[in-house]
Length: 364
Ligand SMILES: Nc1ncnc2c1ncn2[C@@H]1O[C@H](COP(=O)(O)OP(=O)(O)O)[C@@H](O)[C@H]1O
Ligand SMILES: [Mg+2]
Image (cartoon, rainbow, N blue to C red):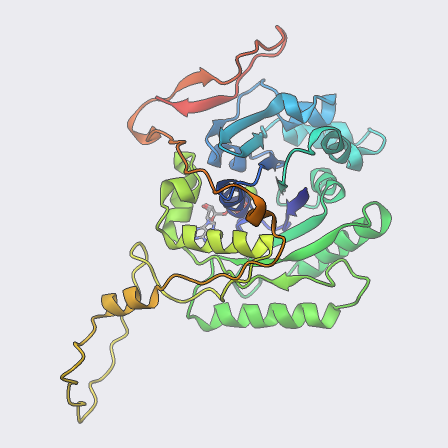
């Protein structure tokens, strides 16, 4: 089982979007995947189609009351479970301060019952709080989403310092898997410069003993894509919401890279939801005579022609190879924008009288 904390203390860099869509991609590849939402804002929970209830069991109860994760997890798609969050989780931080071994609570909860998952992804809050420390103690790897802008690297040293401390003091296994560049503006100098700066940043700090010794900047960049920003409001992953978008393409590629399959560098080909920029050039003085044999290609044709299927070379002994063929997704969420959602209780087992179930699917 791989346990991945998706972490950056900055907000709005793509942690939740990456957690949800990587998890959805892994689940579609037949990997049994669990998302643990550790952010009191519960964005990952909502993005995966659950509505955080006021008093229902969530990560708050697990962390403060030792409620087993098994009791709060919900299945939202084939192979994909979620341990949801709730705004109450903000209070957990205060309550946990007085607890002995407060950083280890999640690790103990996971040790008890997570063995049947292939991947556990933890969506962290935008802070280096006790919730984040719990994720770092429970994780084997850290994935750092980073937004490609000019202050991108600001704060990265602090983050690595924290990871280093946790790895030295409590979790020797902890490694930085790498950095994934989100909201990448392909073709811009800024995007390219940030990637170069990142390479230099890691090269300067590389040492065999550091947890980031093998960290890489993932070749799969997540390009800015409006469909990725729209999907959460429908409670759907990008693969359900817009499977042909470049967002789906990028997260599918990142998922492959994460499981150890070589992928090409993210191309700069645009897809119809983000049409390519039209760059006007002055016509040359002496136009080339048209080739009689080849018809002139329109920009659309060029785009289509470039989108050849990528030949991926799976490494030997990848877990994907031994799995049965991925099950086609049959899980469909209704269009919540068209109707007022009625709660539909997921659990057939009644909750204890003092604990009202409030995890619901958004359904018609
Ligand atoms: N590649 C992308 N293109 C466009 N919008 C994105 C992309 N990635 C994330 N977003 C949007 O940016 C906002 C912040 O992303 P989010 O994943 O919630 O960040 P974090 O969890 O780090 O706070 C969200 O509204 C999300 O939908
Ligand atoms: Mg988030």
